[in-house]
Length: 336
Image (cartoon, rainbow, N blue to C red; front, side, top):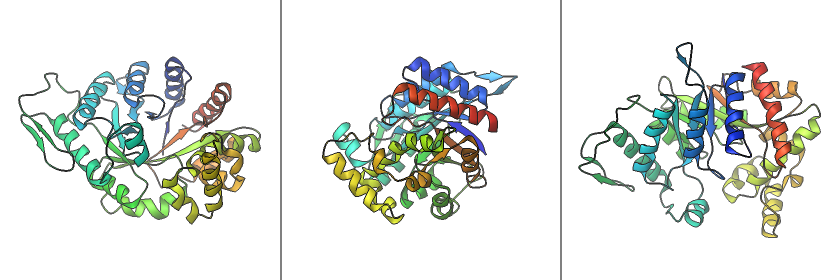
């Protein structure tokens, strides 16, 4: 199983340094998320800041994990993907996700109606733009009609892998149908991957389809400290209504209710970890001593082609996140 990393940095320079450390530790892909930074700008920094070839073979891959699919036009997304693959010399992977309704409508001013067909159309349009040709047309919930345009630069590769993030069964099925890989949510327990996700992906999996599980991984010699750092990650998502059904089904409905109340009362969304019991942290993250974390990672063996690991950062001072990432890099190096 490939070990990937979602690097963190208080500055872009520090983030690139972390990506280089991940590459040196043996990580397979470094992924750029989209929340406080642009996924595409971050991916560009990672592409130019990591080694392109070593001994004639490509080294660490670079991906968006994930870029928001609807906040940009599908054509701009395709053009950015082509540019990034050029910067990365053929190492780029385009990861896309819908985000939730509030993120699209309130933050970015874009519609969220019918997200499933909109995402399917986005993938189709991106592929058509990358394939070139004139005209470029697609009719659907998202449409495109382009005449007289042709990208005048030779592509690095004929095909850029597209990954889709999905939590619900319909979105997971779309990844199996239309993409080259699937990226898990940050909270993706092995049992959920095995029992709920993989049966859907296997219905339409092709050779080479890449299943990328994900986990917040908090490493410390003191397991209580490791859990404390990871708890804010779980608390953040417990406060988001979109995930309430999943948590409630697992028996953590009261935590979601408490987190929602705290949020409405003015508590920051990234500082709700005190509401999260240890058993919930253990259920949704990999947190503990190095040996405990190795065991947690091993639970994904045979279930995923890769595991995307990220250090805890929600609501933590920069120096704490920095230390947590250093411990995670040491762990990846010992395994990869």
